[in-house]
Structures are given as C-alpha cells and as structure tokens.
Length: 276
Image 1 (spheres, rainbow, N blue to C red):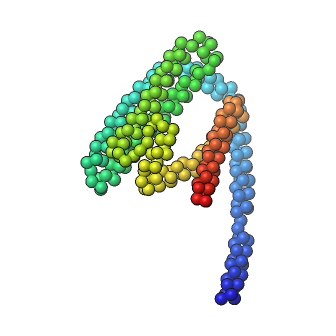
Image 2 (cartoon, one colour; image 1 turned 90 degrees about the horizontal axis):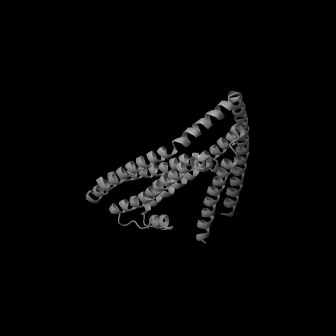
Image 3 (cartoon, rainbow, N blue to C red; image 1 turned 30 degrees about the vertical axis):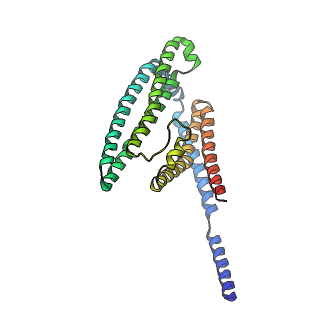
C-alpha cells in the first residue's frame, strides 16, 4: 500500500510539472496586453487625425445643442413627466390583470403568467429608471450657477418643481409596484419605505427565486466590472483629452469602479467568515 501511494504521488508530481510547462497563461496575458496597447494607440492616433481641424466645430455644435436644451428644458421635463405617468399607469394596470390571472390559474398556466409578470414588471422598472435618468440629464443642462444668473432663474425654478414632481411620482410608483406584486404573492414580505426592504424581500423568496436573483446579480456584476465600467473610463478619458470635459467624469466612474469591486469582495469575505 505504501509503495502504491508513493508511486501515485510521484506520478502526480510529474503530471503537475508537465502541466506547469504547458501553462502559457502569462504569455497569453502579455500578448493580450501588447495587442491592446497597440490597438489603443492606433485608435487614438486615428481619432485625433479624424478630428483634427473639426474639434472647434464639434465644440461649437455641442454648445449650440446645450443652449437649445436649456431653452426647452421646462417643456422637456413636462413631456417626460407626462409620458412617465402614462406608461407607469398602464404598467400597473397590466400587473393587476396578471395578478388576477395568477390567482385563478392552475400550476401549468401559473408558470406562463408568472413569466408575464416578470416581463411586464421588468419593463416597468426599466421605464421608471429611464425616466429618472432623462430627468437628471435634462435638468443638468441648465442646473448651474452661470445659467441661473443669466436671467433664466424663473425657468430653472419651474423646471426644478417639475423635476421634483416627476421624481415623487416615480418613487410612489415603485411602492405601488411592490404592493401590486404582493396581490398575487401574499407570502412576499418587505416594506418599500424600509432600508431593509431588499433583504426582507429576498428572505421571503423561495430557493428558485433566490437562485434567479443570485445568478442575475452576479451576471450584472461581471458585465459592469469587466466590460461597461472600463469602457466608460476610456470614453471619459478620451473626452477629457479631446474636448477638455474635465476630470470629474473620470473621478466619478473610477469611484464607482472601486466601490463596486470593494463591495463585492467585502461581501465574499463576510460570507466566508460567517461559515466559521
């Protein structure tokens, strides 16, 4: 038995050595970094050559566009609010209809209506967040001391009031959304006004629902951490290099990058420590 054990250990060591020799991870990583640097340099040079002589035109065009948005800032915010209310109410009405179907259907039809509930709910939440982003972008066009002191302070005040009204509706809509979902799922727990709402809601989900949440969250983290945030960093760096947009955008994206990664790693360490 001892001889066989020693023989197996020797064979395992030889196999590990052969695998280490075949391991070219560092070579591939070096090649990837070299190719990325070369491609980035080429793209940067081509971009500068393409924009050479046109930077002033692009900057003046951007200034004209910003001025136009500032002039129609109030009507734009009113339009966004109106569309948000229309789509939000239609979405809540559809969710209530689906909730009734869920309560009346059997298991086989229940899966179908459960999918419809998820799809309609996801579309409603996406519309809600999109409305918030559009409101912020439009208000930011004139939300500055320079614009206010140029004689547009009344327009800015009215725009801020519409902005607050739209955000109030969007916030209450999310509460109504949760309560509408609870109509078909009375087992769900959680107060939308509580800071512990997401934890309470997740604890009331079954194992299948939790798995969907965990897998979706991890997929979103990987896409943000490995794709979208690095891409946004490059875009903000190019914007500062070519158009002198300032470093605040770079700082904000970098901070989000650091916050996202540190939050994920801290959670991993805490969950590992909870097992001890």
